[in-house]
Length: 163
Ligand SMILES: Cc1cc2nc3c(=O)[nH]c(=O)nc-3n(C[C@H](O)[C@H](O)[C@H](O)COP(=O)(O)O)c2cc1C
Image (tube, rainbow, N blue to C red):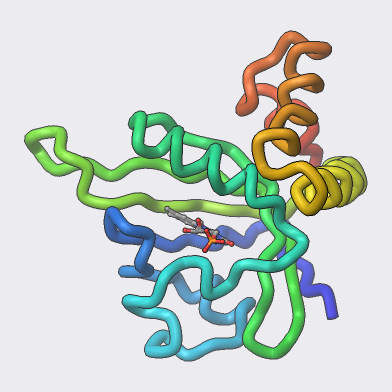
């Protein structure tokens, strides 16, 4: 069963440097239908949905390690066997000396057009991942970025629409 976010919802979580959840806001806990104790200190892939291409997460972690923020469309699973789509911004958290102390993500409702586009894109990527691997799957994204002359974040933002 798909769960829809309201237009005013923000789903927030924070992780340590290894991706273990250190904080989840009420909207996050509510939509995944979990108790806070089910997810705190657990790896964030606890909500990973099999429809998500591996290449997207590989890119995410490369960018985060390079101290760059990433926008992404993400499908997550819930504890009551549902799923939901979000438009996410994932970013780096620093201490006062500039050391990375963790990461955080703020997400909101995915746009209608973005969802249609991303569902078919991720489907293609997953097929390629099964036959040719993660690097070939990422090339599908690179081709789009080349054609549109956009960075990854620019492309993701350009297809998000809430109308
Ligand atoms: C702040 C932050 C938030 C994340 N949020 C999600 C999320 O909502 N869903 C998800 O599947 N992965 C999320 N990830 C990525 C996971 O850490 C992980 O890379 C991903 O689920 C793939 O898991 P796997 O490498 O074990 O297959 C997040 C990572 C960070 C740093």
